[in-house]
Image 1 (cartoon, rainbow, N blue to C red):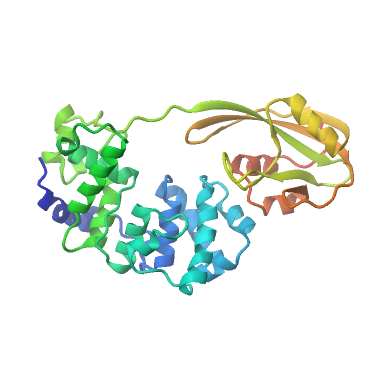
Image 2: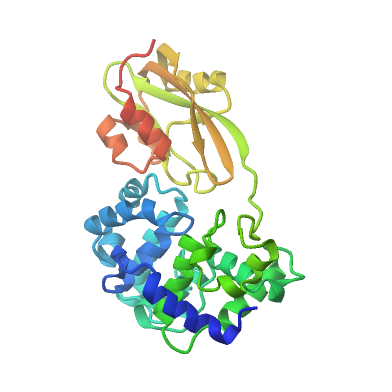
Length: 355
């Protein structure tokens, strides 16, 4: 059994010797860069985030630049990272910081958590890294570490229940060390991401391997350490209406609703069937030709999407301007916030007459 008083000092020592120290947001602990990285890293691996982070800070070097930008530009840079509500909240939060705090970040977790898109754990991470506040984090990786390292203390609580969440927060608060909060917080992240993984944990590299109840419960192999159950993906089939102007290289896009899959992004219209897609095409103009493209598979966290593009050439009818839909050239379309599979589809196929 791991002694609670020893957990923090042992983790700090391990992180300083074996943890990650060269990530781009670790250079100066600027709260803007820390905040941006924490939002990007929610449910996304570091390897994926690195390229997005660098492009983002080149275009938006500080919170004022981000607040002054249009949302569509933010979404376009975010395209491919997924969980697009994060980008919308990021933009909203930047404007809140400018309007309410003069462009400066509050220095404590409580005030940070009052801002858009910053939950309790993210606020604690920003406050710990940027301002040295002793605040507890509890993201998915940390939950897994604590479930395994302190399994007896959590017995009797169903995984992901409100009772277990309260117990985990209480444990996270109790484990905070008196010193070294930055190394401790980074250590929790590093341990969960690189050692105490959901699958195939590297128990031999763990500083708590000798007295970890989770490992002891299954033997030295560690291949089946306790973890929260994964939710099965549902399946969905969407027809994408790729309506293009027969005379000029323009295509029809619509902004998706603010909730559901790809909230607020521009997208080819989606339908349950090809017939429904063609009915919409006839409302846009005279249909000259149409052809079906090979389906594409796209995995979301809880949904497996089969996307069936239906390409339609038509002569458009005159339409009044609409903030939620319109005709766009290829360059205009690719400058918008598009879902990653739609962006790849448009980039891979030239705008030519179908058939």
